[in-house]
Image 1 (tube, rainbow, N blue to C red):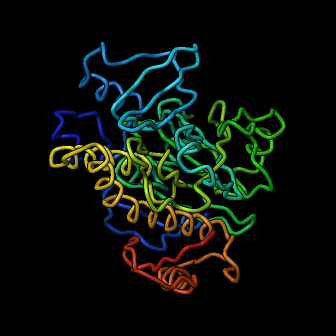
Image 2: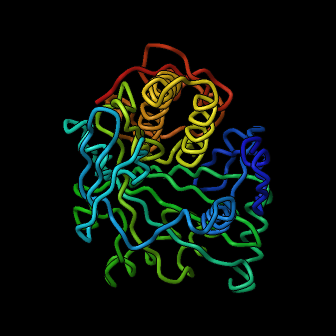
Length: 349
């Protein structure tokens, strides 16, 4: 937030001051202050683009290869053209071409589950559903809810992204991705949607289940991260930022935050560096370790919530069992703060 405000950017954020862990029956296990801010990507992207001169942006052109030379980078584009640059930043997402050329051994890892996703406005809900939802989720609009389903083992996340638009995700264990190999999202088949709606209430309770059942056009998003976090984000005159550097699962809500922090750190390093390689080396040194720890922490949280950690059977039902559930997750290295506990992390492939 401070970085965006420093740029003079103020997208319409929905403040979320609380998190709540709950059962599908609606029983609260843990409710605590843990502030988030949510917004729509389109709003944030438009304001970020407004900071740049229009002549700086070029669309419908894809970089296909990069070739580092003594003091420059030669880039070839999809239309056959090419150009020389002092520096190249790869901000080309989880399936980064730039990363594949800098670090060809780096691969994405399918998490073992996909997310059902949906958006629905509260005004579009039936009156009984809206009333039930407001009653059962009283902090909606000021809280992000995590809902644990014991059978089948999965979890859901639900929150208001602003203007009364409810965003929900259901993380469902699946044997393989739903989307094509070069994509993360996929339209759901009619039979899949019918099955989701038919089981929504039995899996998630009346309030959330009816939200899911009434949402138009739910879709799949496959969940990936880097199989092994990178230990550096640059080589000579080329560096990675955002998901290209640290593709991360969504469970710590860190994807966009890490990218914004990357950009800010890079700007700080540019202010003091004597050369491009010096700037990118300092940037990489400042960011790689922290981002890598977050990739591993988010991976752990996703596995924990969806019952994929060995020996972690069942789901918590109250605060005491929730704390035991976290503490017995079997990780053992540098502590990283997660919710109200200190959750240790280690490298997990």
